[in-house]
Length: 336
Image 1 (spheres, rainbow, N blue to C red):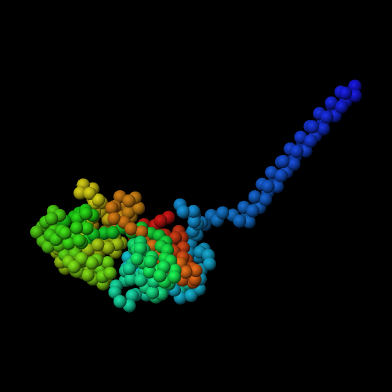
Image 2: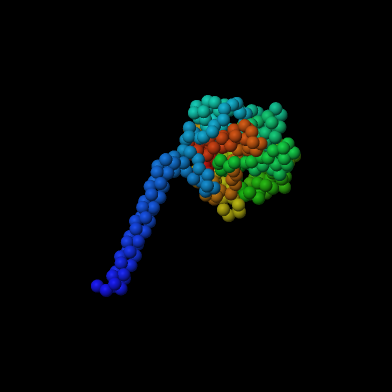
């Protein structure tokens, strides 16, 4: 073999050898990288007990798995709509986290409501508040004047029910008609297809302002008024009203040709109550088919202190799967 051919053969062999070495290094590097990722994943697994919500946050399955739960006595209060959630959730929290002590606090003046709860939070009488409406611009400004901000954390969806006297021959109402009644523009039931009978709206202190509305301090008081007045009408959270034996819930419509009842069909005659009760139809609230719903929110004081941590932790409890299940059992639509 000539020297030229030998040189060419050596060059080819060297290129092949270098190629094999490069491939080996690449394979080894990939294997080491795969091994590192495998080790990392095994040390920090994606928790199977956590679910990622559409906003990207993760919440544990159970109350016991919530992290960084503060210790102390925390006062909360606000909307009366929250009563069934509070009764269901608070004891469960206390059982698992006894150091997270909860104390429900009524307002000194006025009835429990979203407004009084937020005001008590602003006045440093509550650690966090429970609201059935968004924070108003005026409330945001009051917080800024006091050197902090307010944050609302949605935890559930609530549907509003409208109820009347059981004997009133009316079974449905539009949102527009309802608004006109509470504005004092519609004053007789014959204006909405009923009998010639004066309409008597009942409302809540700190919520309804029309002079024609009889104001009450509690839902129970309002229901007693409607039950004793053939022309009475009242509105509040569906879980508080639909199962009542002494008033009749109405189907509600966005328009006059599409009415949706807040209760499951068929309607249970009130004569069969309390042996059988009407139940809230959560499906129509969840789908948006029912025309009147709202979000329930935890209102947190953003001040970088224990109050903020406690309020955010309470919301985390409610957003666990266990908390959401308790919310569903209380008659509200869960967000998860």
